[in-house]
Image 1 (cartoon, helix red, strand yellow):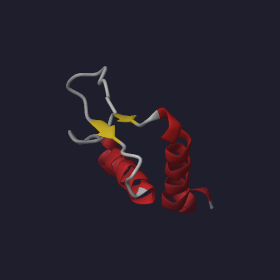
Image 2 (cartoon, rainbow, N blue to C red; image 1 turned 30 degrees about the vertical axis):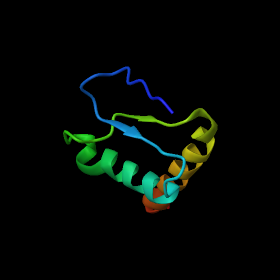
Image 3 (cartoon, rainbow, N blue to C red; image 1 turned 135 degrees about the vertical axis):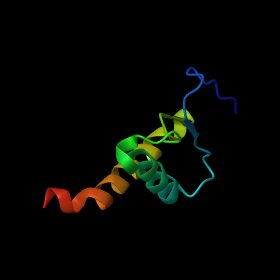
Image 4 (cartoon, one colour; image 1 turned 30 degrees about the horizontal axis):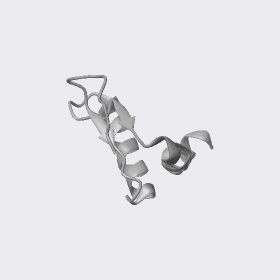
Length: 73
């Protein structure tokens, strides 16, 4: 599998289809929202295989709801 990074100097996240998807989604979300994303290692974009993209988006949405559910209530 080959990834091409269109943004040099940014903080990419590479998702492997064999990873623990739930843990990866929680960590990516935390990395982006910690200190309002204003840390030098905050993820700027995610590179994920196209056939794994929907699963990753679903996991990220679930992590978001779990993390910020108290804000909605």
